[in-house]
Length: 360
Image (tube, rainbow, N blue to C red; front, side, top):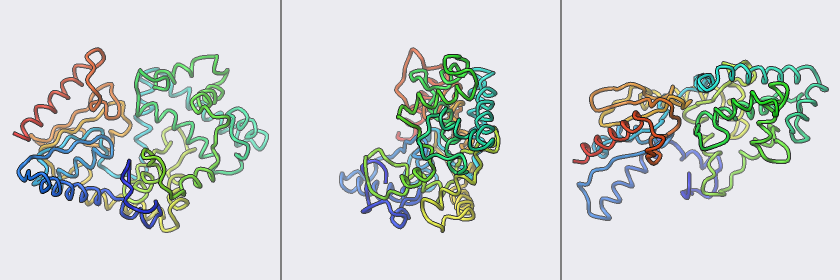
């Protein structure tokens, strides 16, 4: 269901029932059997690799089928399903504080200024719409439109933290520097608006909830790299992992994401179903305590996903590393002798040595 793999006529909710992590794992089992037979290599050893959700699949593959998989590399993999993933923002907040101790407070103040102006009445939210260059049909009287705006604001800092890199202009350090730059506005709210407008790049920012839902309801296949409808379905159907704003206030509660499950995929995707599905996933896979051996697990200290992963060695053959100063899947990037830390280099070398042992 991702990339060039289009196994169904379209992405209807009925067809998406085949999009599960368990089905993906069984597909890998089938693929291995096919390759072994096709190339007559019955005794070759297999190692799974993956980062992020594929990293979860890599780990689960080794856990469920150790007789097929000699070992696994699991990079930045969340393995504990959790509906209200409030820890995500906790890591983002800490990343910002490390870069600039004043940054989190400035962002929170800008959000609260925005929230107060919206709550002041029509004249107030119209000022917000003008300041943030929101598309004309956005309404501050529509609670879901308001939540969509805050989702866009917070999401800017989420993305910067998850994919933090000095090679881009929207990494955490840059965003925090913008919050101190008077060229972006006199108030923190004005600076937030300037950042959002600059990064969005369109003539107006579409924070209309209905437009988001209409986009997500589209069941047609498009570009090979398009997978948002598919991934959100998996969060509703298996994992949760909704990145709420609890640490910064009540403006982005988990209910906002739970409502999207129903609005996009149908009334059967109730809050109760989402919570029970996440519990089932943890019961099935073992959450942070799976049956596991021959696995290297890596995380970045700046990666907001790492609280849902395994952070400590489980036994002599399951090694876990939290690499300081790195974010999502950094260890899978090509080595760079000029910027890689000694710890990052050590983790890559350790991974290589373990793989050699597994396939020996």
